[in-house]
Amino acid sequence: MKGLKIIFRFLIALAGAYLGFQSLPHLQQLLSSFGFDAWINLEAWRILAVDTVVIIIFGLVAFMLAPLLIKAVEKLIQFVFQLLKMLPAEDLIIGSIGLITGLLLANLMGFAFRGLPYIGVSITISLNVILGFVGLRLALASKNEIQSFFSRKDRSEEAPQPLTREVRDNKQEAKGKLLDTSVIIDGRIADLCATGFLEGPLIVPLFVLSELQLLSDSADPIKRARGRRGFDILNRIQKEINYPVIITEKDYENETAVDAKLVKLSQETGYKLLTLDYNLNKMSVLRQVQVLNINDLANALRTIVLPGEVLNVTIIKVGREAGQGIAYLDDGTMIVVEGANRLVGKNLDVEVTTSLQTSAGRMIFAKILE
Image 1 (cartoon, rainbow, N blue to C red):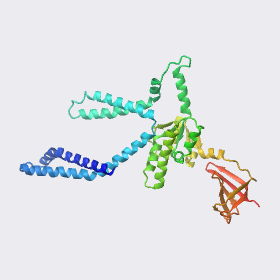
Image 2: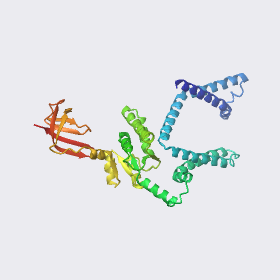
Image 3: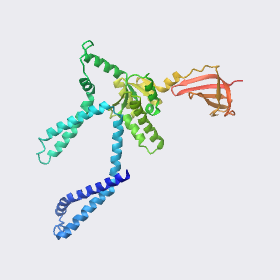
Image 4: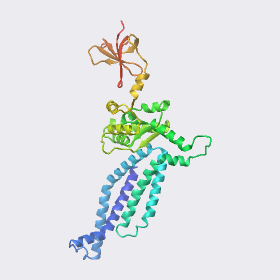
């Protein structure tokens, strides 16, 4: 890899030198316009020497700037590659078809303008950019129609195909689950998809992927690990579990906070919002958005512990309040044992007094069994 970077650096330096060579006539004209004609009146070998120095300077500048350019290109390629990995295969294929179609139309139309002086090239480039983008967006927006066109079959014994497809698409859309960053990084969503209990595709907005990318590029190692874990979880859901994941480009330029964008998107589409974020949960309830909290599901599936029940636990550490000891059940539920602060490391029987359950988790209070 290092050797390849050195090769690219020398290629960029050669490109800079070539740029310097091509700029020589323009440089001479520029100097002449300011009254510096000494260069033109020099002897041939002196002119050649000056030209050589200019070319070398351009090459050296390009050589010094090459690492920055290579690093910027690497980051851009990595970002694009991460986004492409998240996109379903059918979106990539259909989007590519739309892009190629738009570029073909742009170049066919561009033939009529190439002969125009000054503006011909600019018009052709503009057509390529505009029609390429339009073709890409139009193909993705018409994805369902394109797929149904190629997969259409005669089924006379069934209900009319357009109505069946419309009903199916509406049902799938209504069952979509909108993911935020916290639930992706948490990872339990992958296990939930594998069980088959979850219905409908997972909807991941592009602005959520951008937030994951910012975490992945963070200088903080903890944030960087969380961001990369998020991408790994999405890859596992798509490739190992083979669960449908849809990347939506819908965005709201007037909103800056990701939470506000998620709530607005959920309101407009009817998608249920999957999150572990306490504040987003509360805001969604206030905005009358249906929220699914994995912690609530985990708490509901935990074994119920009733007051008066006897448990055998090991005291792990001292609690916050005076006299308290802390123990844990196998599922991670914390048990606060009164009067057990001096029994750290001891195994003992305790009697449950109360149990507190919230969206953040469950806590059991107990006393030492006498």
